[in-house]
Length: 164
Image (cartoon, rainbow, N blue to C red; front, top):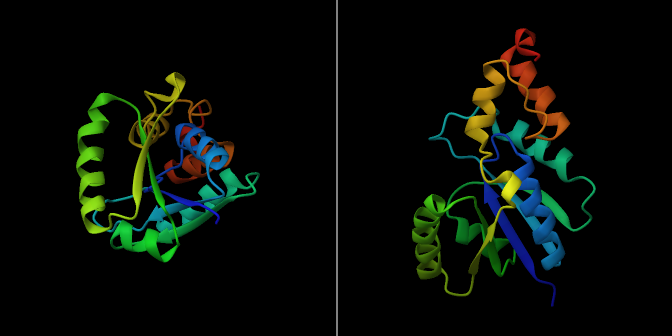
């Protein structure tokens, strides 16, 4: 039986750290669904369709990776997709406490779905979507942190005055 993993997130925008996790997960599981959260309570830079399109573009070379949108309970979505695993990336110990609480709640809601944590590679531990947006908005270069398509889209959002 093929094993499906769901890697959820807001991906606003997707970063090279996210891509590192996706590539590694794609080597471990038969199918990976990158689930872009609609998440109305956050005020995203990109709307859900833009985030989904940017994520699709970033993963297009990975044959067993698909991108989808979701809202509502993650375990319900994972069950609908036939996933046995939810994947979460960790950058630092500070991420762990929140992620640990989420994984325990998800296990309580559906004991059949496991959560696994992957540590990001050292070179990505400091990258966050929030910081990347801030750097770009202030005119800094983000090409080391995000795929080229994301960088172009961010520069369009923030205006051409910040093309540094």
